[in-house]
Length: 204
Ligand code: SF4
Image 1 (cartoon, rainbow, N blue to C red):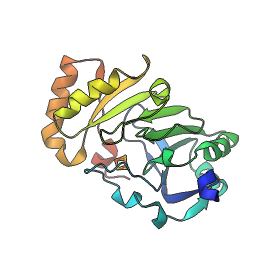
Image 2 (cartoon, protein in one colour):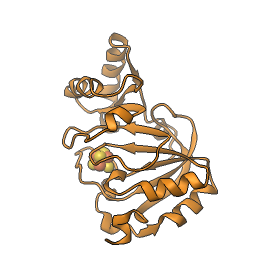
Image 3 (cartoon, helix red, strand yellow):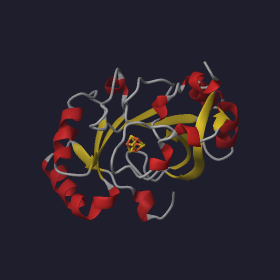
Image 4 (cartoon, protein in one colour):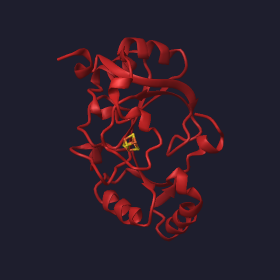
């Protein structure tokens, strides 16, 4: 097993300090660690450059954490699909530095790591596996077309009762979809609207 398989190194695509734009923690300053590698294949994916892990340099988690700790107490691990990799070494090191750990995941691979906040964003073409429905703090369904409302309800039926439910327009169709989401949330108020506010703010 090499160090990437063990999770001691991760294919690091980029890391940056910004404002979390989406979901429950929107508006909060956070350091983002974007890990390469994803085979979920969403056709509207806005980070397709993340898919091929080979194009992102294997980076020691100790180095990633050292950088992160200089910027923020809140660390968001995203991708790509971070659960492609073993997240225990990274989250252990983040925790040892007393940092708060958030993950954004499709749940397509078994949950690893120690998380303070789990944002589950399931995708139709590779559904979540294992216990993540029980562990998710928020469910964020990206709405690209009308069938995604059906999918959202199907997924909401699987999560734990404390999980906060969000519908978020896919960015490229936001003008068409956002009014449908507003209407849906008013009719089904267990859901909330999530917007990619960082994109409106023109920040990463
Ligand atoms: S799961 Fe995320 S990174 Fe992977 S293809 Fe879908 S949107 Fe892109």
